[in-house]
Length: 73
Image (cartoon, rainbow, N blue to C red):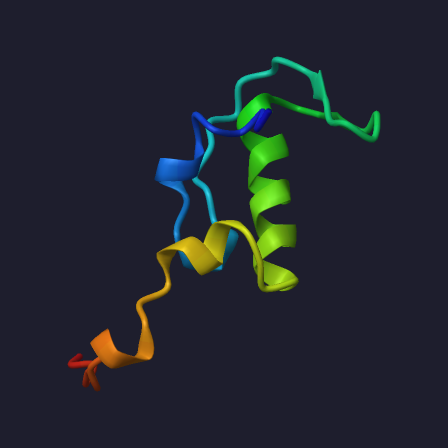
């Protein structure tokens, strides 16, 4: 079961997740305590993104659908 399923739709590329600062301590599977569930999931997503799996892979477009984009400022 994915403890972070409720937050998966809210993450951004690179595993970023915007969380509130509410104090509702929670422990992850390894026993490490986090300030709240969202922050625990944000750390999980960041680790997934760093190892190139899970969360971020699901949102990547196939190379055939990528376009060259120019950033305007």
